[in-house]
Length: 306
Image 1 (cartoon, rainbow, N blue to C red):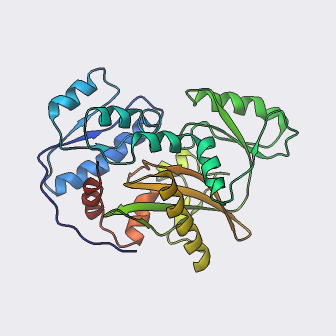
Image 2: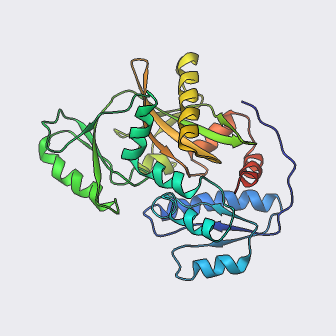
């Protein structure tokens, strides 16, 4: 890990976009609060605008920000829509661009790309197949484990499919083989144009999988261990593959990739191009383990905005 504490060019005004219309609205506000606290410590002026408001774009343009900080999650925030609007208005923003964000939010398209790199991914199944339970059912486009179910028997499948479709704007779902193993996540950050992998977090959920409650609640009972308790060579392999995937997608700024490790084989699960930055978020734990001060990370994040 190469990290350089950069000099901070004083910015005249920032806008933080937070809230939005997605199911992850409350998480978005929590992420924004963490960013606001950092900016206040550093004496940076900002305003917070909620894209759920009909007048949000007019307010944004009127604020004349030098840069826009995306604290959004889920639909509209991570799917390329808001990025496209910002790019049309020549407003530099944190996170990846519109095309990459749209790709990353589409789990099926991302899986196809990752598999083309020779990286192992869970098998995608069809509802018409003779399924070997348990299986995982999830929306094709959604985050924070909304709409995700582990289905143990055929009688539970229809309910799980309805739930997944409810949380997907296109009513599209994915059925995957369930791979038992060690859950891991790897953050990737852009340091002066060079992508760097952060230490891995090992996730030991109290529930059968790392759901919304486990991700964002202090009372979830989920254990998050950083650095992960796996062999050094496996850590390096997952870090290298995470950076390779991020590069192949053309992603930038920062992100997080989720993995499952079974019998020494890492399987890619999904990518998050705007991961949460709440006090309990995984990316924050990884930054801390890497010895990176959060305020320094925010400065670097702003420097990478374009």
